[in-house]
Length: 68
Image 1: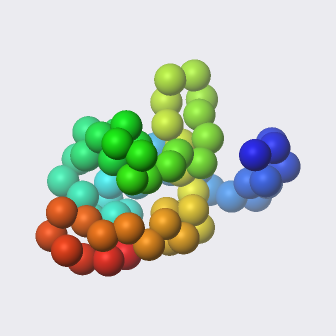
Image 2: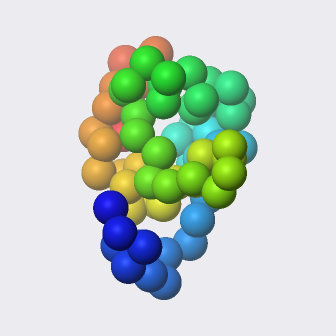
């Protein structure tokens, strides 16, 4: 991924990504990243960053069996 890949995109933090994906917490998002189920779009230091487009494209199934 180059710095040009997400030009003009709105970056979401783990907390915002959790709300977007209807997950209980930012820790749930970080655990999905740790397990390889979800991939962060970028990083700012240690902070994970996501874009709505990338979250939409994952097509993962959550713990409740709901697909996104």
